[in-house]
Length: 186
Image (spheres, rainbow, N blue to C red):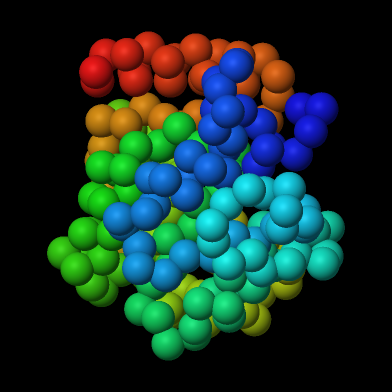
């Protein structure tokens, strides 16, 4: 991408970065929030506690566990917002969090759009405890695939749950789509 995704503008010409957008949409969804990043705190330009990721090569699972540890292992759930999914709506996040109360037996709550799974996701304490013992190099995916009915799917109208920004072409495409959605909401 030419620079860290956290510092990419949400759209060409915007002063708001991917991470700053996620900070804004999570503000009224979660009481306690942290950022796990290998970047120096001053580069992130957010008003959130930053947990240093000293070993980014260990993968996303390592970052999830670092964040959980910082927030407190007694939490019932943790909302995990990957920085490469910055366009998700606050309503989607609120629906995911509400689903933890509506379906408390689940270990994970995931959004889907037209039956396609996306991100972000909510990890319950039981899943986090299992992930703590999982090999970091495998990530969360192998364990998540075994959840079956313990994974609750929340169908949302928010197509952005599927928009994973990994390439310049995806960035151009999704930032343009985001602009259309934002304009439509005004």
